[in-house]
Amino acid sequence: MTSANGIIIAAPASGSGKTVLTLGLLRHLSRTGVAVSSAKAGPDYIDPSFHAAATGKSCFNLDPWAMRPSLLAATAAATGAASTVICEGVMGLFDGAVMEQGSTADLAEITGWPVILVIDAGAQGASAAAVLRGFATHRPGLTLAGVIFNRTGGEKHQNILRNAVATALPDIKVLGCLPRQQGLEISGRHLGLIQAAEIRNIDSLLDAAADLVSEHIDVAAIMDLASPLKTDNVPDAAPYPVQPIGQHIAIAADEAFSFCYPLTIDGWRAQGVEISFFSPLDDQSPDESADAVFLPGGYPELYGYRLSSASRFQEGLRAAVGRGALVYGECGGYMALGKGMIDADGARHAMAGLLPLETSFATRQLHLGYRQVELDTGGALGCGGLLGKPGTRYRGHEFHYATVLNESPGAPLFKCLDVSGNDLGLAGLADGRVMGSFIHLIDRVGDENG
Image (cartoon, rainbow, N blue to C red; front, side, top):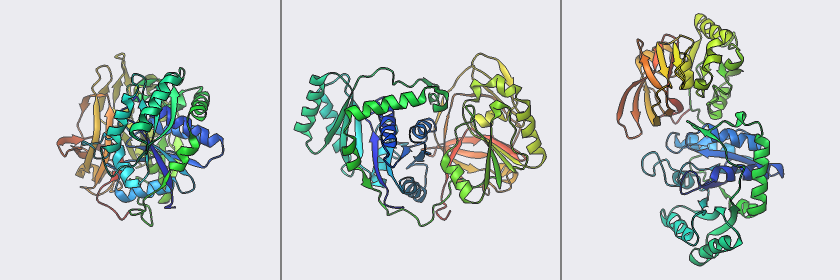
């Protein structure tokens, strides 16, 4: 389990092309029968869904800031237990939660996996070698093993790039030059890329990316660069990130509620929890035998009318509350538990009405960043200790554009700090067994024993 080989695909900045390259590499390896798994650095729900579409396997997040060292190590080891891990970085190589802390570079040093840098060379020639030199020497403990140039021109341009690296940095391998290519762009929206499940021709897109990689990239050399995972922090038994909120948890799962980490679900299952799924967009209600309901984040703001018209879904939530089940929502799921949500066009849609919450997308306001949260007394009492005792701490992430019009009365769920420890006040609501917040929980803090 601990011999997992891996490689990290990183870039100087977002938009350099590392996602399409990673997807093409994953699909190429998968369709040629190579045992490959994937991971994504940092907090992200959307890119991992594309990874899963490329390989047919779950993609796990590896977050050096939000995850305990033991959980990070165990997840990396399990991801590559019987395969090579291709891990996609986040933002620029040295961009972290605070300066470089929690960056892709941190992840590379923790895992021991070498870095392949993807450089957008569309507007430069030999200067690309200077960019590469800066990234290669910025952190002496980091292994930058190779480079791939993206959005290159013809053979002359590619030769300039290759010769510049061979002259200035002969120890770094040029693994390929990807030409400018139309048709591989993935559309985006306010939270990033659109979801993989929304792209009808997703397999065609992934196959086209794989064809591009197989033609222009030295895939065998990439696989030779993969290195074993450092085993210093790998525990004998993997810890669990989030405590189970019930013994049978019904999870909302569709295009409106898709932001749920596989690691959380796997952790619940490993503790003997039964998991079932239902689709609010298809007007399905949670399983009547479930003693907990989880509404993850997603894009409920795009489906306001369908959700407000989903009577069986809303009645099913109220029935769950009536039988004493715990109902918990994160971000979009939190909004769906409120009284109403105003969409981008200004239309108000009635939600489940289980929490005194009104939200709006008519006037957007970005809320983005890591969060450190502590379970408040009201939330702890309401959940009966299932999320933890008062004072239980988690690390998580917040990313949304919703404006809160009203968030009261009710007991707060969390006390909240930003990544630097600045007090952000109280977050979320808890009303008996119904609770939620805009925070996506990633891992517990200060509990290395499970």
